[in-house]
Image (cartoon, rainbow, N blue to C red; front, top):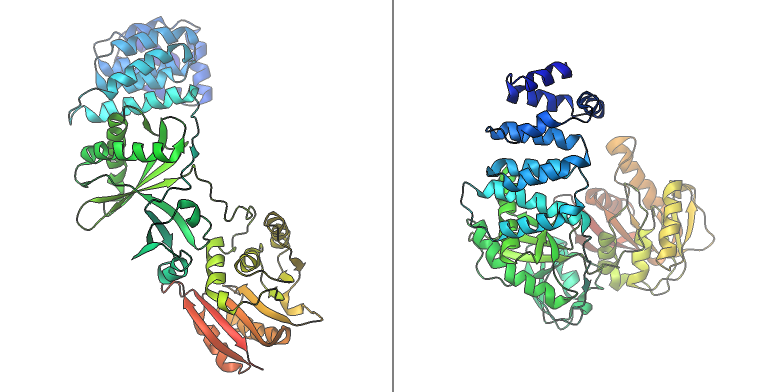
Length: 493
């Protein structure tokens, strides 16, 4: 079949149709080998078609040649690419060239990239020039390793946005004395503190830097990109050692249709690269900066930067986890909310400890004494031991069912992430809660406290009613949707 298709191409029979069929035949490894054997090193028919008047014939011939991975074809393909006047097929030449060892042609690729960067575009040409530009950038970066930048702005006082639990923003705010704080729907706006004073706080999930770039209209991606470029570049240079370029990606948080966001983001990215003269480079994988654009109700963007050049070491200990593991920031928030009720150097027990996160965060909030972690899942216990060693904490872990656990002395505190499911469904979960409250009473001192992270507030309330030895001290709602709640419960007798 391949031979017949090729003979048709040689004889000028429906060249475009047969070239497309040849390309399809060579899409897998076996097909490419069959094509290479058929050509036998003689590519003159296809190289001759690179001068055909039909651009789609030129395109398909180039793509087949690229699949042959013959280095002798590289000068021919590159020369044809440079002379190609039809914009929409120039990216296809680059795809073909990218299959070969094109390092000797990097200077030519850089030259073309600079031409595109300075080229005036129209609505009709933007799409094709943008595609060619991104391919050139990617091909050049394959040989030019990104130089990583080091964050150096720890002493700087910048406007920050801390993404926090929506229901318990105050828990983070009170850890920032001296800051000027504005409560936002998803967190806090923080002014007046050095970055290094904010970094150690354990109850925010993300730290973003606000960028002042003037009015950024959502209906003009080219203008938005052009206005962002100088502001973002100046900001990054101020906070980092090392010279540009900086590599970025864009995350758009708005009301636009998801299927249209990709093209919209590309237009902003292209404008940023052009306006920054290549000192800001869009990269979907090896990026240092995430430019987050938050759409306001007035139709403008609020620009924020998330910097991956600034390592977040708060939860570096947690290298190992299981699917049911509590997120470290949630464990830290639980400990922070319960902090007034925690006993320094107290004896602590976690009956469902998982990989140890809750115990570790409890000890970081208020220094603990002896800590025990119990879990029936052996893999979790092994991972808990590894995490705890990295955290430089000491916990005695026991691979055992809590309901078979025995201990010679009582505990000051029980802190745990309550199980969310049981094999017997809803009634099984109720039975587990009932058994837990009974068993906890055996191990908890009089006046001792339980800190429970639970998605079942109704069950906790039922158990409190059923077991009068406990008294609810405090309840903190973390999510109204999932009903996640932190309970502080005291044993009164």
